[in-house]
Length: 401
Image 1 (cartoon, rainbow, N blue to C red):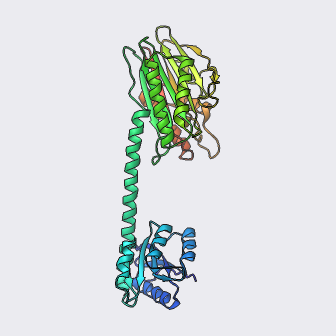
Image 2: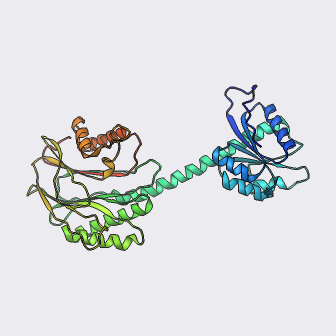
Image 3: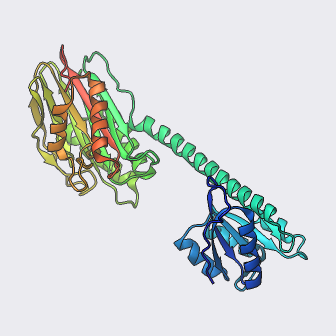
């Protein structure tokens, strides 16, 4: 049996609309509840189901704000009925309807998760009005508290992971300006597996990495942190180039366990004295070079991503001559895979370069922040992926765009 009832005509215009699901197999009692609801002055929509199974199907199709639950149903009785309803609709207010001879049933139902209880035959319109409003308010407050707690836990987890994914650079005498940014794919998401780092070695050269572990969530983020720490330790230990990538791949394979995870990365060594940059690409895209004449994508040799074919990878270095003043930007694909302002098109590298060409002059940090802001505006939340951006500026007058 199902009854859809329009809002009570005498209800206040600012009164919220309550979606009420009555689970009652006695048609006479169901009619009395419906009449009482009309007398409360509440704005409501009522749906009635005679069994828990039918009520569960109704909740799956149309969520409710409040459930009025009889404790003697053909397919569920007592606190078991409350538990079953809470399992189907954990964030919906539940008010149980008990008989006058069931003194303990109401309190037991509340202990099982109901917000309140009413005794059949003793319910008046004013009491039902207050009970429904309070139960819904209490349920909404509890849900908000749970969501706030979950948000705090996510924020704490993100903060711990971000400290590992976005570390302070280790710089000695280098005059390079380092700008690093990391953003998760969504405000409520755990961080993903993008990572970056910059270290000045004992050889006086500046070493940088930007990488991306496949997948999202804590496992990818943890592996990203591990690879970033391994890269820093290995670089400080004197490992370079292809041998460094082989060691990183061995670590990835050992730590990923049974998960099918791989990682792409770009290794960069900046030699200011020789005015060159040496690149190794492991399944990653090329960096961008900014000079006084604009920004372009570099051309470099590609190698396979780490973990795809363990032990079989081969990575060829590419040496790039650098101008006296310039900037290199390394990034993950979260910067280019978003939409380009349309519903179907993606920004891509070409779109990113066109966008950079439209940005006003700014210092490196402001320029990176504006670039990320504009790509997010074009994407409009349609594609969610974390991103890491690392920009290295050098020279007496670093370029702004």
